[in-house]
Image (cartoon, rainbow, N blue to C red):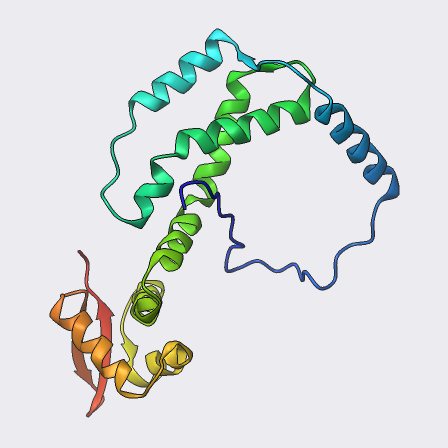
Length: 196
């Protein structure tokens, strides 16, 4: 996971991938020419003193992440930051000089996708049988309130291998105090994510 930078579409993404826009031939030629120039560049990329100071200032504020799947990504965030900055810099200029503004732009891009990236890292790294539990927690977090048992089951049934698994997962989440339970509307149970 530490070698992969995952970019996930946000949930509100509205562009249909099946209907891409028609190709702008002039833009295509420009991009291909630019990529050819970049492919033929040789040499060491150096950075300006401002860029180096900016990066070092940010880097020294980093703290070791808590152990777990996210740590693999977060331990290499600085590597992703610099690799993306190099790509962005080369898109602007053929000079092999990394500028402060480009590093700041790279950091902004990474941090804008990081919440979704970390969710995806958690999901991929989790034991496959526990993905239903992870999905339950995500649904409850997104709901920002209570969700009925029927509604919750309706959203996660595809993650379950057998009917009894839902009850087992809910029992585990209650025992580990990841969720709480309330009784409303007679016999209907509602589950709400507990703050940790």
